Image (tube, rainbow, N blue to C red):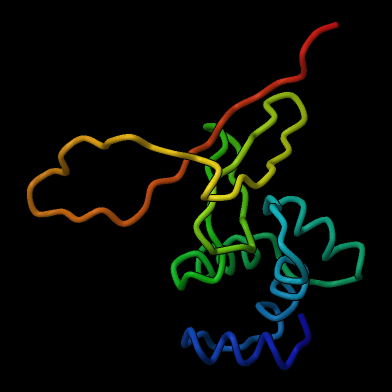
Length: 135
């Protein structure tokens, strides 16, 4: 994603375009992918960036709040940021820590329980945990 595209996206989502936010977006939004904050920090460091760890976490939280990325809690200690915000599901390999997309149309849910009073359904997301078969 080019800088001008990122600036347009920030404007559309009412996000102040700081240099640090642009740098994080250039890594995360370059293509559909799932990255942890640590992976983003590593890539920033490889590029010689001086963006702080706290700034990366704050930026990712902001992006999630504004709908630019989806936050995925793969397990109690692993959070990923998904650059694809279209409805879809995931396979999560518990051994490798990798996430893979599953098309929304590939999952069928027969029925859901009644929603609590005063609420409406926002989304349904399926996370299927897998691990390699043993030969």
